[in-house]
Amino acid sequence: MLVVHPGWMKSYMSGEFNEEAAITTEQAAAGIASLIRDYKAETTEREHPAFRDYSGSEMSWT
Image 1: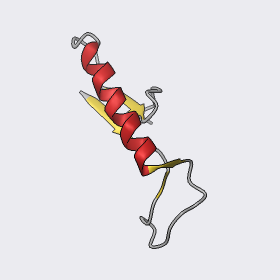
Image 2: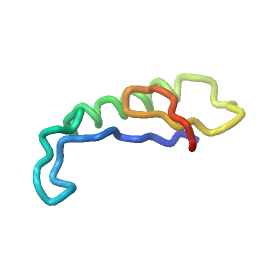
Image 3: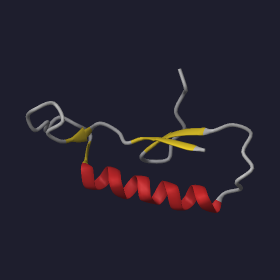
Image 4: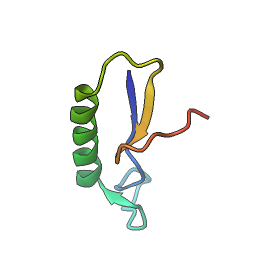
């Protein structure tokens, strides 16, 4: 199982466009698509689920 955090994106999610965010929605989508492709290529027998951000960095569950 793979859980992905898309990152802090420039969007209208808060009701107005957020210019201070780290990445665009396009960058997040491209990163997530790449992460899924790479993850599927890895061994599928993981001991635990993975939680990663859009760039592929592992994140803590806590």
